Image (cartoon, rainbow, N blue to C red; front, top):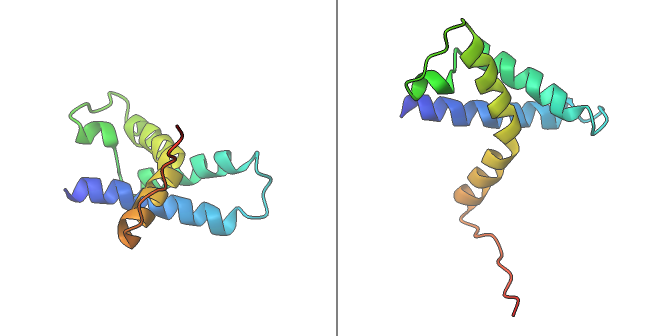
Length: 97
């Protein structure tokens, strides 16, 4: 459970760092900044999603790099999910007929 918590925490940290520090960047550059931050966080904290699932990488740091890219890509979604969960809000549904 600690590993899952670390992955979610890193995704939230990645999202917040990009939100605060990448504001002056063009919107087209923000995904690249998020990728760099996500990979850096995963390498620094040795967070490897694939090793957690029982599929360790044959090349050192490969799992951490790919995990960082996954975390950077999903950081916004995880942040939105946690925000809804923590505040108890339920997303609005449309009742189109």
